[in-house]
Image (tube, rainbow, N blue to C red; front, side, top):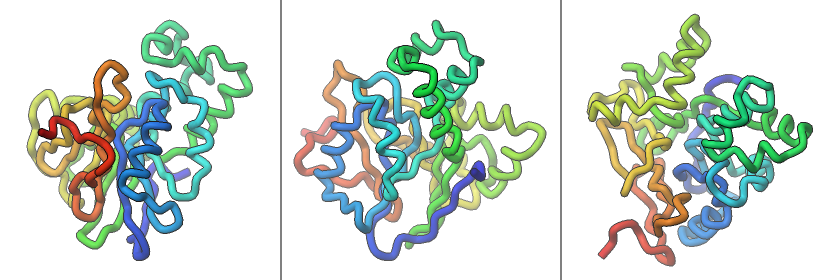
Length: 238
């Protein structure tokens, strides 16, 4: 699998992106029903972190088999790979929500790791209004078109780690645009509401946080606006 997966413009339906699911697939399905998502023509793109934290992690393989669902590899997918390959301590994985997978038999852990390893690090989608990039945490490059070469280069491992883990842009409130792309869609950093720094848009609104009544952000990739969910209370809406 190439580290970057490219999608032509969807001429028959909508392309939308959803924030970190973290094992909350029932809630994600409800959000899709609320926006009348049509799997026959629409496509759903995920910013990664499909598992850990939530209660329905075992459903992830079913979602990854759906032809309308496309995800990048987040840091939680990477942890599942590392644990299955014997490169991540169980204690660390447990602290990050991996208990469900630690208790799986080894063949199941390997199956999950293989599925996650096939996911791209980045996705780009052509829309009616221009090219949109998707990574899990951040694109720490000036030009989107340098992502593939950087991942394949001598610093590829460090760059992949930044793409999956970094909060540097958020911490520094860096509003510089990533050139060569209309927007970069990311998750990883839980926000009270869909927010942006330059043309980097943060769509993890913490729907997986059980103690809070937050909802998924579903972003229209053509308009770069959240899709209203009429049967779901939006964040902070009064």
